[in-house]
Image (cartoon, rainbow, N blue to C red):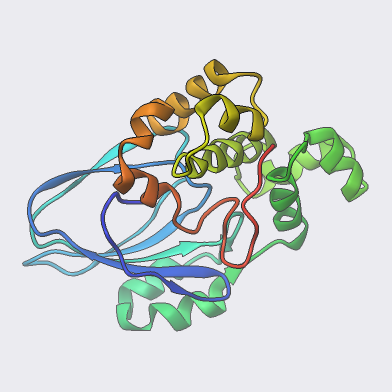
Length: 227
């Protein structure tokens, strides 16, 4: 997800957004538990269609002036039918309809991902609630090339903590409310996921706004949760 203002439009299984680069820019991208289908338009060439990977660490995306991006952020855990990117490349203007027909959301994995973002969640408790072994649940994530269960649990906790930074609560209180052992523990996790300490994030409203956009743990209509 790019650290730039964008227009979001909710749909059943994705969030549509649009952005145009006013100048050359290195935009930070943070892990959010989602994949995006990107329609990238630059001067002098046909649109490029890209499906992003799940980000495990923060990174920079290089944008050139005039680049136009229409993005479709998929619900955490969503899958796409083979050939969907080629279909969008042939008819970029029909991306909304193509995604509506080609997107698959494995119900059991969607439920497991949501459960992993809840307070006190663990691989053991989520597997038990689903009526499967921990190994079976881990295998289901691998079958769909999804990050391991702990990715979802730990990222959701970090995202929730970061979004609390806009409040007047102390960092120590936020750490405790978010399920961290102490403030130092929260600091290490924020550095891991966002490349910045909680104190520096608190001083950067633009970055906090980016982290607060719909994604893992606060998808449209879902409650932001902690460990």
